[in-house]
Image (tube, rainbow, N blue to C red):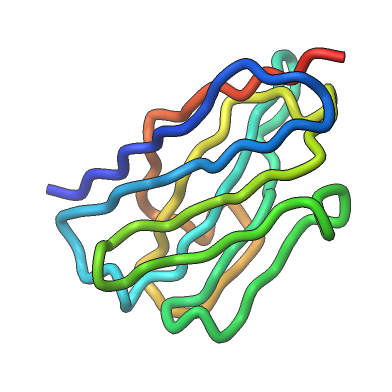
Length: 124
């Protein structure tokens, strides 16, 4: 059974940092591209960052480039999202997603499995 369990969310002030983690199980982690998406109240779920199975390729949405870093530890089946210089507009529920292929994509439809989400709230 596939499981993705996010952790690390919380309430922080603008300019602070947070590190999200997503522990995966039930599939071959190193064969799967992983991604983070987020969904703010009243908005569509949007792509944040993705990393290929080998970590050779990484992609970010423009609004987080230079502030967020995605990484993975294939030995521990965990993907991370280091978020720095957080802004109030980063407030959202952050979801971890796994694809059944190594190649990354920014499309929601490219991911087969989803975590339950972790709340990130950034106050101004």
